[in-house]
Image (tube, rainbow over all chains, first blue to last red; front, top):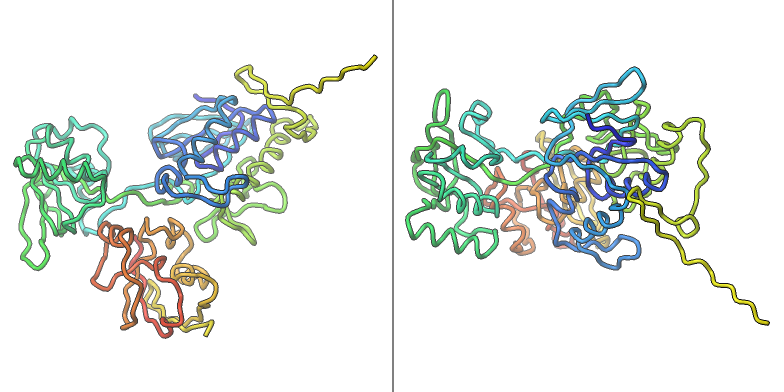
Length: 351
Length: 109
């Protein structure tokens, strides 16, 4: 069981900055994120896009913002459970919460801060009527273990980096790799496109473009897919596995079952006070929350995180009175033993 | 002209005639959001960077629209329910030339 003071659901900018504000109050944090890396949307969707409204940064790339935040919180030694989605929450008799992920990892904390942005990122599923029947029976949206495909016939659909990269990788593993894309053009890295062309020419990848998957064939498991080239009759491609790789889409996910008050796909909070939800001890900050006048901006998430941490401190230490200090005055004392502080003034006397 | 009229059919098939300003640098996706014609969290997910296709719409009128950018074109190549008249709402800036534009929101992805 992972134990901490504040359990943060979501490792985007707001979740990461919460670690800093909590650290100033000597509170430890652990973060859970469904993505395999920190940064949330900033690293998953637009790492190379510039952001212009982060205070003191006239321009910063979203990926660089994540790196800077990680640097800023390093001294507070946050823990991370990445690539796992927070699934269930149970309140304990002592008032703490146990949050369990989809992989069974358990976390316990007196305070839970949901900083989940738009939600956990789920694979985008193509609108094929029977696709749900074949999930884990030959249809996989994420490749977890490439060995599953050894000597099997695999059909991959998509035109981005994932589709290209996995087609290349599996061409050495699977007995047959077919890549189906709606266009002749791919939007992945140029060298990946070149490599796929090379493998196609060598007969190691069967490339079908411009075409779409129109159906999945099989009874208990996938035996093939129906493919339609634009303007032609559909035809069948034999397959043991169909892997649609159309990117990720954020969904609020299992959080909606936690008993929280939800409005317009966001969690209602008390913004007049501390961003607490209708369940005492559970806060929601950043893009995942809603209140009158809410603005979904990173800088607003930072503000909300700051106020939330003050409230969390009082909840964890009801008998203590915290006095707010400026970092310029009090410095920053990390859990790793480091301390940053302003240099002491040198006073010299003149005789 | 600073305001124009846009006709938007939502995902339930209901038609809405809305007024859109042309002097505030807003795009069609933002108009849909401001009139709450699609549930929050289901449209404009990427904020308008042509990176999610949640604001895909079908253009039903003959208006001359801005050219498809490479980003928009690439995103539509990855999206679902794409038709020949599909565009991303976030890439259509409101301008006086679009007065009377008719669009239908594509199904939620």
